[in-house]
Image (tube, rainbow, N blue to C red; front, side, top):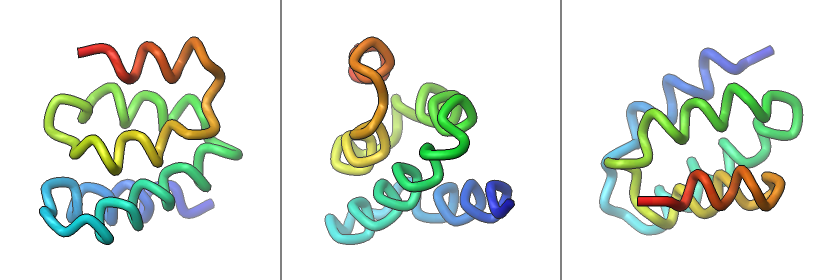
Length: 74
């Protein structure tokens, strides 16, 4: 329902250096992935080169092992 807003928030915080901000929007993506896993996975894959590792790991925490592995590849 609020997926567009979630992506706007994540985009605005994408390069924030604060650890708590990274954890926060990573958690937001993780919770959104409950109902929109493929959309969140696509977002992570599109941004993983610039997304801080903390946010990335939070966002993919609930993904199946194969998708987590794919998202963590360099």
